[in-house]
Image (cartoon, rainbow, N blue to C red; front, side):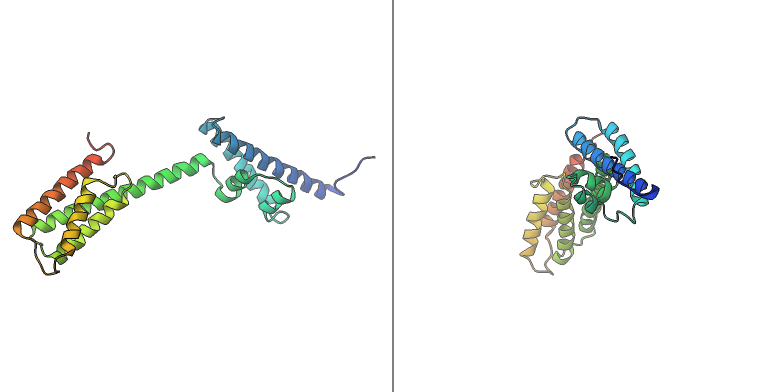
Length: 209
């Protein structure tokens, strides 16, 4: 005796869509695991993953009234597919695209911090040349420079500029706001800034060409 899962064409289409959704989630889970284990190349992964995401978006849009929650669908059919749910529902793009975007954002952020450091170096050196040597003039400039250097992760903790700025800030903190650097102190600070700036530029990737 034949057992029908549906009573009409509408129900049949619904179950067929359920089966297709199930298959997409399963296939995505296997693809994610294959990519993590280096079984397939990034380019192959990205092509196949993009196809699955596109099919998933189309199908989930069709089923949105019947399956409003994909995670619940996966639970109902006892699908243990966390990687697929993350890729299809949470991320919506292949891992390769996600990583490229993160790397680009990181590079953009680093470039902005480098520019900030350069500006702070030049501002501090120019201020000394203009004889702005009072503690309440010099201290904020060195603090800004130190903060920007600490934000740049490519510099080691013992980077010359970091240690020298810390030493100067510590020295200035023990002086009064209206106190001024002597000519000798001013020349030494300018020398330390210039030396640190040169070391900073040399430490940047591809800076020595």
